Amino acid sequence: ETGVTQSPTHLIKTRGQQVTLRCSSQSGHNTVSWYQQALGQGPQFIFQYYREEENGRGNFPPRFSGLQFPNYSSELNVNALELDDSALYLCASSVDREEYGYTFGSGTRLTVV
Amino acid sequence: QKEVEQNSGPLSVPEGAIASLNCTYSDRVSQSFFWYRQYSGKSPELIMSIYSNGDKEDGRFTAQLNKASQYVSLLIRDSQPSDSATYLCAVWSSGTYKYIFGTGTRLKVLA
Image (cartoon, rainbow over all chains, first blue to last red; front, side, top):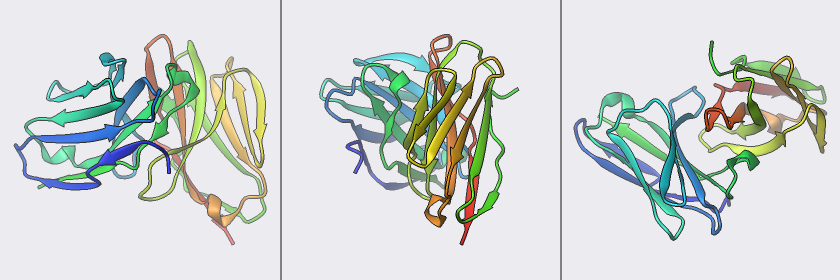
């Protein structure tokens, strides 16, 4: 497998709730990014962390937030869930330079009802 | 104009044929270009990267880059039914410091 692990694999939440998704990257992968992929669409960039600091963000509201930890793990937190937040959430990591391409985790399928 | 554009397809080719997938991008300072393959229900998998103008070959795959035309393509020779998937083009730019994906082209290889 890829060496990037995400949990949980599937999740059902109610509108208005909060959710935390987790990712464990490969050792030495200092860059981690999170993507949202709706059905039939390409992945949409949420944000990126490098050495525990956010250094890039896509067009997502502040209720999407994240953390990266020294042990190469990271979290995506989403507050006040909306029905449109239902999607596959992908974590991707790379060595220091993202220009070398990402390794993706298998994703978390979030359903908001 | 979308930052990275791909024809959504589906692109249908017979087994053994060459499949040609195309991608255009809008940011002229883009530096790195990638092709990912995504099977239904799975996460994207990196299959090719290209950084310089010209062709780059890896097995049955050839990536082609033309920065002047802001165009990148992927050729798959001797297409197999197992190549049936969605192919995502991704572009990284130091200008925006973002890694942007296209919406993907769905490829169907007919046995």
